[in-house]
Length: 386
Image (tube, rainbow, N blue to C red; front, side, top):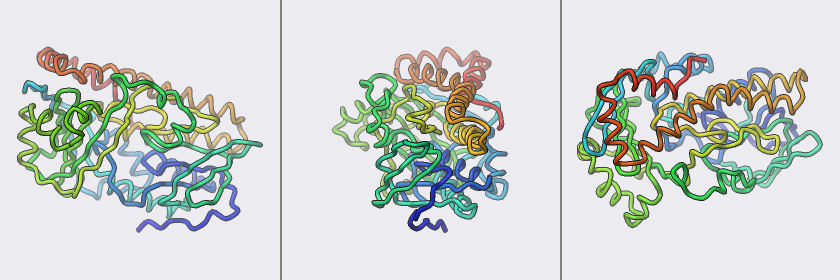
């Protein structure tokens, strides 16, 4: 059971991490195990459900086991095949070159939070950071608890969008709506007869829906669409699913056969896939806060964990007085871009195709005779084990 830290007292933390998703949790564990004082602030209370496709590429397997997650003991579904369908019902099935596994964020994040606390991380749950100010080589953080804390390094691991993004006037948060921002996402857990080794991606008008197995025989059913789609359906998720998603015959069948396990769907709005900066006012951005790959690429969770390792290595050199702050920041930006920039650009390009009903129908019909092209597309959005 995850236990929250009490008051921060007069501790000056080596690192304060805002946001306890995969990036924040993994970064906090690595830093604490290296002997540093780490504060982790999470606005929710573990365990909790998050909007997520809940498929993880195998490139993260060894990293998670080294962190302390007993993946081999959890009997998780091994996912080896991808099914793509178009709104008109055309489909293509393809082997995943590396493959992955399914696990809910409820289970994984909860376990990582337990590991973080046992590793010495000061975890503050139900706590929101409202202000961060950098002066005289230190950061001052003001939380919703009404108290402040101090840290040498601050990392923003707060996911897709935060109150701080707006307060800091980050460029992506100020952009007008276009084909790369203003999306909504909806997630369910369902019981359905579905292959353990398959992840399916079903396209519909202005969106797509993924389904794959997670633990305990459950499946994650998660879709992304435009805010406009919801608005045109009286802002009703149920109406939108009936009028738009179920026009894809595969989705109509899935929704009719599924037993929905959550009392309400988990939702999120104002999602943006636009480019983001990796450093903001000396704060290192990690995970979705630094750049979000489109969900159809199925690699966001692995990227968040890999980014935590990159950030850890850069921060370590700074805390050991081997490099200056500006060198740490530049090193992190350079390494982040070398590792992820190509994937994000490929994801944005693919997103533009799958955002159009006509283009999706044409694309899937066109690539069926060319499995090598499908492998090439997948390779452009995935990395190697780290």
